Image (tube, rainbow, N blue to C red; front, side, top):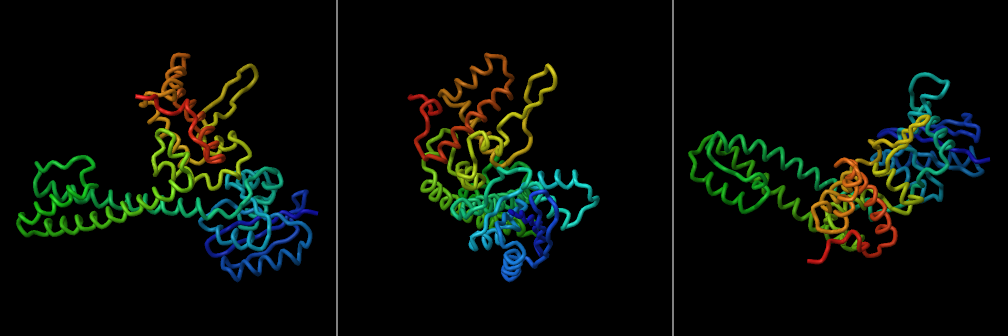
Length: 350
């Protein structure tokens, strides 16, 4: 008998509930979210359920990664259950309320109901790339906040001082402002502006270093993806990091659904139509959107496809979504096969 072990993960503890093939609760255990707790959990599961086991872990990888690694290293089979499926299973249960054991049982039942859930596996390459991209974005956000404060100080010092929209990202502009501040009267505003300039300079150096490292990694990991027009190094790194091993998707349709690029059926009776998918991985969807918008500007067949959809009656957004769905198929194949970009999406020769 196969027992599904649903795991509700938290920062401090992990709650595990076993369910048989009928979804009945057959065991429960709570352990600390530490390496020692993971070993205790594994030993308990092997004693209680010596036959075949499947671990269904809530897909919250910022708190489940260490548990997944421990289980995979021990030769266990692990699947990931999206929180949306867990919430649906909990809502349809007879038990009312919410608790960690209730959530863990709902995770196990969701895994029983959905046999094609993504299987967890080690993928340090994409995970490291995602960590670097996320860290760079955090630094960019922090730099933007400092830049906004600096602009108010500079406006107080000289309302006519003109700084380009993205000028504070450039070291040459920062050097010019530093020199200009040295000629201003020594006030608290001047001192604060100088400190903010120094912070921006330090963050810019770290951001540029990270971008260079990300570019080097993505050229080695997914060179074919970089050949796709509109897929710069940062966008390609975002796709690789958010995809987290393209082999876990059964088909390009599953990948498109995961990215929120596939339309959702919304038919009833004689009405046969589809609606926009607002779920999925929005970071991956945004990366596909950037590629699509760029290709619309390029003189290539990607733009021709968009224009053809417009001529056939699609609105601007409908044609854009159709191009994103097509790009999802192309990106999936490039990641899976690492083959050159297809000619119909390359820019036309000059």
